[in-house]
Length: 473
Image 1 (cartoon, rainbow, N blue to C red):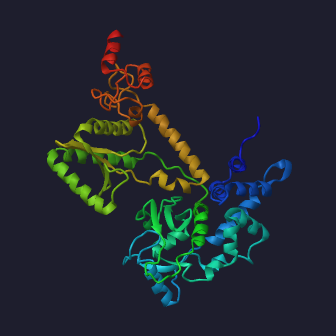
Image 2: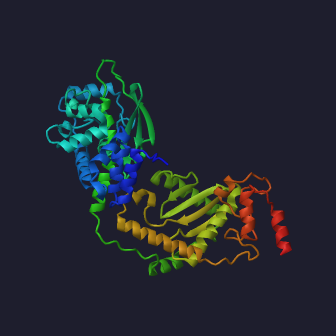
């Protein structure tokens, strides 16, 4: 059978088989995946790195790639052009709004007329070696390569300057934004936020839509040149490589040894007793007063921390979270409350402490503590290889503790929720036909066979069938 793998597939497989230290693997993959012609870039990589029977040597290519990225990455203060006339004209041309975010001027984050590409960073004709010239051509293609080597950005101030918020210009230079342009219409563009790295994001990232549409136009009607899209296309091609190079720098600053933090401590034991005593006293307060207090804290938390990714969950002051649902879903919150208690009772896994569960005629409220730390998704890119191994070991230990939890409720049933009642899981519901009598809950099940059969036939088994099985035992 003929080999149908493309050059790109072979090149990517080669990179992944070498097991480069993180993040050199993703960094080198960007040379292929973000190139203007990925297949051409892959052929260049395979041809250059081929060393005969010994396979491929990626070291020289990776070294040149890092040097090429450094030529287009710049950090430092954003300087406006010295010509005040250019500043005034560009401000009028761009309509007084940031070309990246679409935001207006702010006292705390002013609009500035900034260069898209500093001219000192793109004068690379003489400083580049032959191998870097070839790599630049393989990555950008001949047209954008010629644009870079001709120093086109220095020829016209209006083509290389735009109106942006100061923080947005800084974030752009760090690879947090990518521009894509509509085919056949280079004035219309989309701005995409690049979320590589973390956990510390520039604040402007949270104020920018994940995908924003814009258009370069002369709002002054003075027939001024609009920003040169070639500069933005080049920076956008280098956005992800720049992000990974900055991640590599951050990882390089970390100590080599990785210490595993203990999952439990004496402090947790003492704090558990103190919090339990305090919450027992608080739960003696009438439910209506507690609910009013939680609503007030939620209002305050929304102003302090903003809304969360879930409309049902709000971070509160004093290290707490509040989850709200309609009263029809009270059983779901009750199960979550019980699950947190169960995990805290039988394991050392650091999960939130369930503090209160209360309802009125319309809503149910689950109050929990906040677990110290950062969301893994915000910092997983910046984990070193040693930290990643520690994370895997910690997760394996947590899963082992979860599997060892004894089932002490509803002994007649094998599969239930933590309260011994029907189970709720959106993944199960997605594969079942909706049953008004059953609702969104399934089970409980007397054995695993019934559970599996329910999934296979789309929920044809009713609770009566389960009861029949119980009586037949």
